[in-house]
Image 1 (cartoon, rainbow, N blue to C red):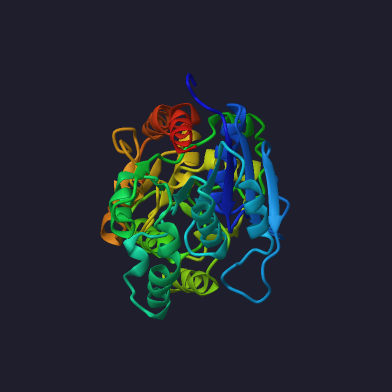
Image 2 (image 1 turned 45 degrees about the vertical axis):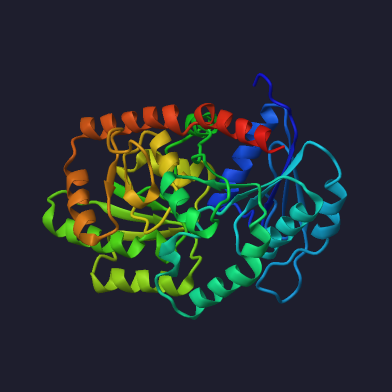
Length: 384
């Protein structure tokens, strides 16, 4: 980019596991920057698997034993050694753990420009219960987190909806909106290598969910709406739920709900599926359904759309132009989701394919790295 001063970005995160959506954001962003001549380094916890970035560098730090705060040993001295160099910036991902707090404090003390991406962790939905867990988070925010983050150079929001929420948490600070993006070249490479011998593929047409099994994903709404839809439609479908059981209690409730609704033969929990097998599940599904209570776009929505699979998701994702592009948006309620699924199940094959092709085109225009990447280059350049 003309006039762009190349630099070194340190991505700092407490979670770099392959099943994390934040991991996908970080690795794709790192790959894009490296391809444009920047230097990137990912700083993350030790012992989270052997996930290594294709480009850039991954440095891991052991965590303090027995702590839930995920405080990294050795990160302080490492960042202080890097701070004197010019042309560097810290990009913090997340808000609740020791990694981000420590990096924010060092950035403030050493005058290193820093960018914070909360990744929808401060959405008001997370605090509606107002129980002990939520109260503890609010106390932590006011006494520990915000005093460190109030000096951050830029706060990044994924959608305008998230930006409006973040104004309340970061009054007077600079906020910038850049959407999540999807690596279409990687998607197309996996797609071209597919075979039809996936062990997960059912014989019947199926609806697909991919993501962590957590309350904010709205999976119980999907199960209830699916059961209601199957009673009223002549065409019979399966529902495949793919993803790790991040919340075992919630996962148990989902299985109990399936038994209660007597749809055990139609609903399958496949656990985590990654790489080519996951792409194969996308490509052979009838439609993708993610009724999230809160989500900043959601990479799974973009993955499905990039593979020309029609996507039913919620207004809460903040996706722009989704319905005009062939997708379906509802509010996270069974009363809205069930009629939407009925329409999905009544589509002809040609309508389904047409919607999928339109969504792919929308992703190319708005959510590809060709569209989103220059926005990051401009922001990083202004930062450092």
